[in-house]
Amino acid sequence: MIIFNHAYVLNPISNEFKKKKLVIKDQYIHAILDCDTTIEQEDLYQNIDASTLYITPGLIDACSQIGLKETGIRWEGNDSYEPTQETSNILSVVDGIYPFDPSFKLAISSGVTSAHVMSTAENVIGAYSAIIHMDGTTVDEMLITNNVGLSFSMGDVPKKAFFDFTKKPLTRMGIANIIRQTIQKLRADGLPLDFPFFIRCHRADDIETALRIQSELQANFTLVHATEFALIDKDAQKEISQIIAGPVFQAIERFELKNLHPSLFKQLQTLEILSCNATDHPISSVSHLKLESSLAIREGVSRNNAIRSLTTDAAKILQIDHLTGSLAAGLYADVVVWDQHPLNLSAKVLSTLIKGKEVYKGSDWK
Image (cartoon, rainbow, N blue to C red; front, top):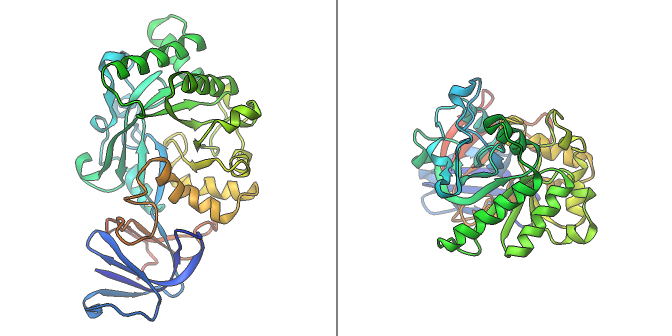
């Protein structure tokens, strides 16, 4: 049981920091109180003077391959896609996550407490995704939500992967047909009509094709990346309800990334489209998640919206806002303590808690 006294605590409604007392009991946030408020048996709690410190919810990486594509390993540690996969045999990412990947320690030292793990972009038909905490010795222990949605991929990456494996071409028409047929077959087999699909797409034509399929099938799509969002038809932009954007901090190694730019974040804010940030680790390191929001601020995104995209809005898009993503009573005590405002480039993580347990302690932490 822990009390952080006189801390700058992120308010989940205003997204501003206010001096408060944060009370953690067992795995949950017990209360957020005015600093002079006392609670029963307060002397039994570990009391921490946090008068100069900032506290946020744990950051959420909304698209990641962490644990599937392991750090510093080639094919031996790459379990991010299955080249022989078919509609009748869709996989689940929880069966490929390695809990001892060093990237998990990197995540918690960077303030990231949870991630939406998706299969990589090589397969048109991806895998059922999962949301996990960044600490644990088994996937079951780390798991927040399984079967969050099914991922699909469009564009250059699945085209190349298909040709490398089969030596046969795959066109954008073929990719669209595979997505349509897969959704129709899964629904015929009993998949709910509102089941979420996460669509990896970069180019404007792929985004518009995804929207066309969504309209035809009345499907529940969340676009992932949406690099050329600014180039699609203005009316089509209005059809989009939510986007997992980024990473923009990455090498532009493919033609479909030529228009990659952090101005995307400002465009989404202007149109009031619910969005959040992602690293797609290891495409960009999980340690760079906060940097995505710093780049957004440079483009004119407000600090409040920038921090929401790492916490509250990510939780809403992933439908886990009843569990984590905010500092509110009853939610998991996924908490990060910073030495200054977290969106300052020089901000350091002093302590990271997952479900009330301290899983990272910085060298400057008392």
